[in-house]
Length: 251
Image (cartoon, rainbow, N blue to C red; front, side, top):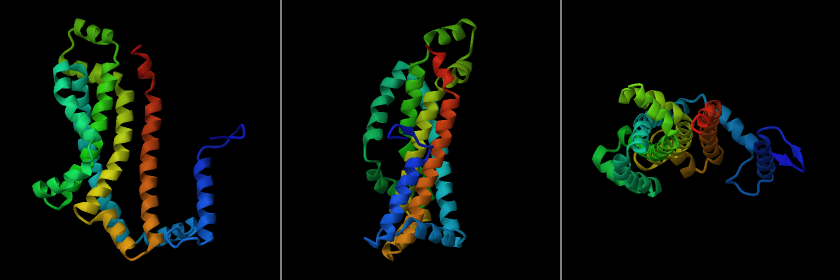
């Protein structure tokens, strides 16, 4: 961040907002926004409790399984769409529709089909993440220099060899970009699932703390979720930068 012509260290904006939050909370303008220091003290108190540990484990399990299926299905489907015009024309309208549609409306359908358990939460998490992964993987393949594909064919490369050694690696920067956004969307998906399908994990804590007006505890859960999403996003952004040189090979 640049302020008055001076480049400030990384995370400066977060520190600035944290200070403003602390000042606002100390003024006790409203009960619903306690000071940041009080929130962190509460977090230290509740983090070792069995209820909080159980909530983290349930949320992490649904998130990891959901994002695994989103990546495992989304990347190959996106690559196939990018390399095959017929598949692309068949699937692209559906992908765009689900990406733009309010997926929360599908929750009642999933509850009827798969019940009120963890399975429905995993599916809604996957649905939140998969479509952007598909589109980014498709976009990465469509930007590949066709000479790479022609060279692979001239050397007699099998379809699976071209898939993994040409399309995947050449499209990797866009794939990682899609996965990064998919991770963020999956965090929203797992919380919506835990709030609307089955009150477990962090969804149960949100319900408990909000209904009892435990605002410090409530904000603790939100901060933990934001920290998880931000950390995952930054890790994948770092990986994106590491593999960005692949993009120059397609020019």
